[in-house]
Image 1 (cartoon, rainbow, N blue to C red):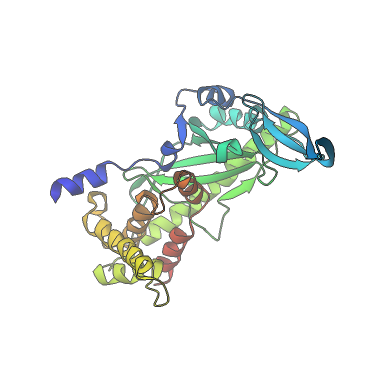
Image 2 (cartoon, rainbow, N blue to C red):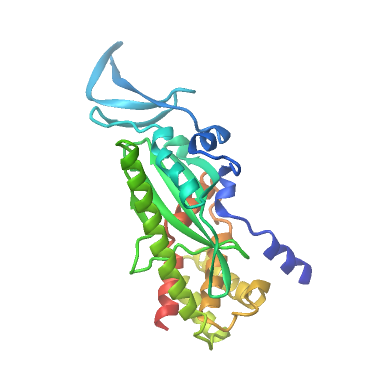
Length: 314
């Protein structure tokens, strides 16, 4: 058992490393795009429909196509303005010097419909834990996703994500890509300000929860039951899976070495829940399961939010 426990808790990794390419060492967003193979462009092509062996133009719509392999990334209206990846992320470059930001990973979702880039801000300490604040930037090509930025803090010792729904600050926001260099600098400073405000509020939450002690097995059973309840109307298979998830939270809370000093605190209870949700493989094994897990974690996971609400309330 001891060996299994050691293996389980030593193999945890950042969720985005399963879906992206590590680009550490890239000094600019363009270098990061090249290193990850995302330095392609999107071109727009008129749509046609075949009818009785004839091709008819479809007015008002165009297809967004990747220039390297002609893959269709989305069908949009003629008024849709394409934002190339190199333009979408260029405003972040000013933060490399001003905020000591470092590019870390880049990747795409849904075959390139959404391209994302992740960068690391300087680490900080919250509730005695080293926390790495990551910024995630996305650019969409399917007509549905705008350019967005999100703050995703990670507890370094266990790689748990802590993108909590704090009522006092935003964890994600839209950004602009147009304008001159001054406009891009303003946008970069706004992004940094929002990220710093989120981290400041998270620090307050963490320092409060780590002082709130008295967490025991009974508390964790109740917490896990709230997160993954038994449903009398569900199938035996679904309830069995829910039970496995509850047991996994309890297992991690009881045995994770990195929780030893905070096991009896609400901060420790939240970490146990986040640990399970962050690192347990999806039960539905599909080609896109890690992409879905990535999106849920970096842009906010409803179950982690529920765990946070519980430890605040109970």
